[in-house]
Amino acid sequence: MRSARAAAVSAALLVGLTTGCAGHAGTAPKAAPSGSASSAAPSGSPSGYADMQKKVDAAESAVAAADRDAASDDDR
Image (cartoon, rainbow, N blue to C red; front, side, top):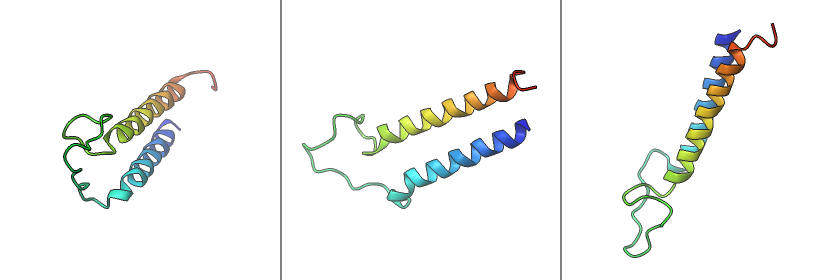
């Protein structure tokens, strides 16, 4: 049961990351004209970096929660 749950979480993570990155179509974003760089992203990072980092952090948290749930004895 634990491997099935881990596989489901992994599949959901893959779908989420694929969907989040699909707008870029595998290409690097166009460089912003000088003087209009976003202050939210670190210098030299792609424009959607901060949002994608939040999605990755949330996915990692969900995987950790699923692992804790699978390891718990509450439902046995």
